[in-house]
Image 1 (cartoon, rainbow, N blue to C red):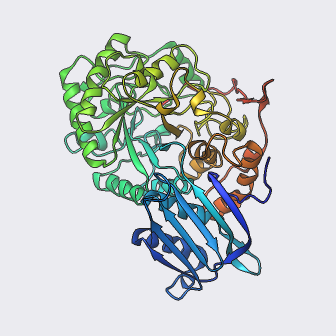
Image 2 (image 1 turned 90 degrees about the vertical axis):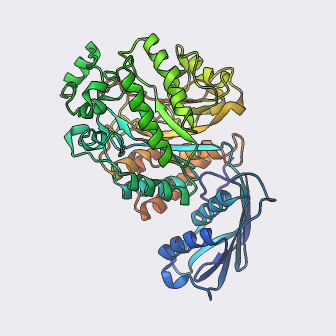
Image 3 (image 1 turned 135 degrees about the vertical axis):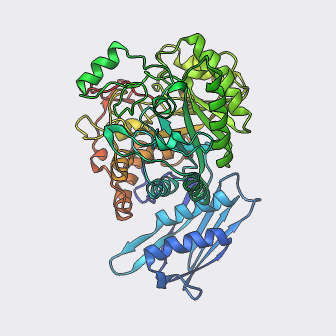
Length: 525
């Protein structure tokens, strides 16, 4: 049942009790935790006006941390009369409480800004709630990445996966291998100028994310998706492996084929590989992963592992048995796409990221489960539910459709613990919503593909499966009320996403509408 007076909160909290009145916010004063106060002061000042936030304000907002209350990342919010109190179990919980506070703000035509009298008790379901931005196929500036972080953090995401390297570009400075950025970073899909982050700029992104309780997960995609490495250091990369499918699809899209040592600007995947039997490859990988790990305070290091279509299973296993341990030796927990689960002797405790369909076919589910069997866990990103770059409807001008068209309802209606058989719920670390950027060349493009479907994955990652308002009718209604809020903050939203473009099955679960007529590579990661 949808409670029509339910506040427009996404993700919806564990418990909400609405009062009858409202709390005026014509002027406010903040006290409590200094970091939380500083960030919220700036945000409220931008909304209410700088003059409305001072030490003599009429409504008091107190921000506190109390480990005795709730659980990790949890918080309570009490708003009544002229006092608003947000109490976090930890600093992250306090931050998420302020995200809820900001979502509750409303502006009346006559009465000005206010929020309802309310009590919220809340904590997340999964501890990993991620979004991914592919900055390799199209490069995004530091400012754009920071704006992407703001949008994701407002929905209580806590991990930013940066896909830093691919065939089309290398996006991070490596001091021991300087040509990676200088030459490998000087291209992108469609032939643009590309770009890369200096180590100082990368640290800026990491620090900006950390201030919003978001952990950066860097990905160096190996051993495939490495054509850009060969632009910088040709001796490290094998000649392109060109399949009939790659040739046919490149022709259909009027895109050039990859040429060894030259920048590649098309969409084809699976044609590149580092020299797996050359010792200099592993010296290179050790240097790169060591530098990236040193720049990244978070616990994770993603090493790719997808779409090595021209690599034999024996060579793939040889590579990942060795490189998973090189990654672990940096002190980080390695993550790989689920194909790496085919390898028997991965580093103990390595995490797998599952990208195939919500109903696994072939060996995909088995490979994903292998990470759990070796003491690891899974991050779920089913491409026909969670991939933000899949078209939201067949006529949408951006995005691809190789996994099907994914309307908002389809993106919302899936259950993480039901995807992989024989994997206990406790082995699901969380969920991630990736955005690949073959067709995305600006932040506005990214927003249009992501919003509002990014909100669906936020609720799946945070809210309990059977929690209050955890239903499609409620979610759709809340999205409709939040769209003007997102737009007022500068986010380009796909308003057509509220149209119900799903094909109901007999059991009532919507399935993606396929768009077989759209030419697209079977891009996965």
